[in-house]
Length: 333
Length: 261
Ligand SMILES: Nc1ncnc2c1ncn2[C@@H]1O[C@H](COP(=O)(O)OP(=O)(O)OP(=O)(O)O)[C@@H](O)[C@H]1O
Ligand SMILES: [Mg+2]
Image (cartoon, rainbow over all chains, first blue to last red; front, side, top):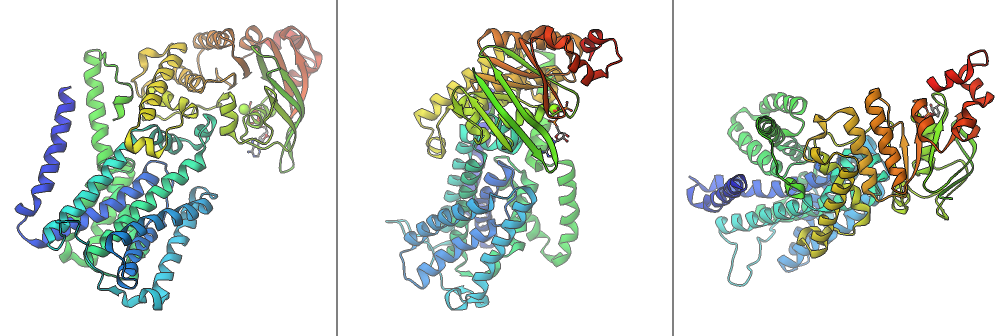
């Protein structure tokens, strides 16, 4: 019980810190970066639901980020739609396209799936880059409006936009938590563990992978739409494989298949990158080895490593005195 | 008949892994499948459980034609299996590994997960109860919260049984359940298989440990190079010259050797 309380307190503490951030940061620039962290994190949570929990690597994710961004951008700029309607449309479109792409690409397995989705991602990038008359091509799309006000709440100031993005991030984490700790989440994890075994116990692996894939595309598109409305300018590079790999790195370093990994990884790497700005391209010389070490020694990232240590100490304690807890399903929540 | 296999064949490339095999398994029986390495025993199970589509032949389970069904549908009809090598989730606890066994009897989806609906809560509770029931059956309740990585090989076999039982099956296919466990523990596994049959389950069992087979099985089928070369009670099989030949060559001391395989 005491442990539960302390965990809850920890969460409240983090939440309070996030909420008072606008008042304690020394300058707007840091708040701007924090807002971006919220956006990237939402997208990384999306990768996590699919790659982290069901265990397939999709490289089309960044394509859906771009689809979300361009749907919002084009509908508001060129079609003059209401912001929130366009935002909704970005989400709906990602579900439809995610379903279709998933339906076809999940016919392949393992490496082939990764390669196939990389091609899909690249095609999305090419369409954005080459379809000049619609997307503006390499010149990009400018003049995207910020989030429209909801009743009395406006999103003109940086602070209010930060809160809006934080709200979406918290919603994303909440939904992820609910999914992970449900029977559906257990199903995803069972598939990651062994597709063969999952099928034997009556799980339709393709159906569940498809669902996870669509959820992941949805988060990507929402993040993309938020990105477009925050930065107000988008170009084809937001659908590029480099940004895609960067997000994957956030997840791997934070912890694949963990609840707090995406936010921890993103926060850490984004700020590390910012503080190493002076190193320019050479910062990759530092990141490369760090990434290698983590992948080799801590395949579940920072969060996985911490959980491993906690598990070991708990077991040591258990050996010194029997633990009579009937934890059951609560154990994983 | 719980399970009826007619004229079942499977070819891999040019290899006849299973060759026109017939088999009828009576409800509540323990039916063993034996044969030398590479005889096609595991392939035979893979065909019944839907992992490989048969090249030809027909499989009927409780009057359902399951010949072309995918594995998850076959599991729902009540056929569970364990694998020759256990593939449990090492990082998770024994209980977490077994809870998911009840998933095929639940309906909660994304909506239920996000809003934690009544159905989700009820089905989680049912799954937990089912898992404890299964763990009770295999006598592992004590280890429910132990990570798989910490338990013995024999205990892992029991967890695999519990997972199979949690799917609420009528027929269980056990592929070498006693492989890699010591002789004392083998007796425990035998007792457990007997207990499964006594509780009304039909059991199909692949095993190399002959004494175990001879004491457990109601009937035995012998496969050799994909072909069924004999089928009958343990006594009939023990004294069947074709079987002895396939296993040992004809110049050996017959029955004594067969019992030691
Ligand atoms: N997926 C597959 N693709 C190609 N060949 C296969 C496949 N599965 C099995 N075989 C071949 O089919 C034959 C029968 O294999 P099977 O695994 O069924 O034998 P077994 O009787 O279970 O043997 P063991 O006692 O060693 O487990 C072997 O020659 C094997 O190499
Ligand atoms: Mg085998």
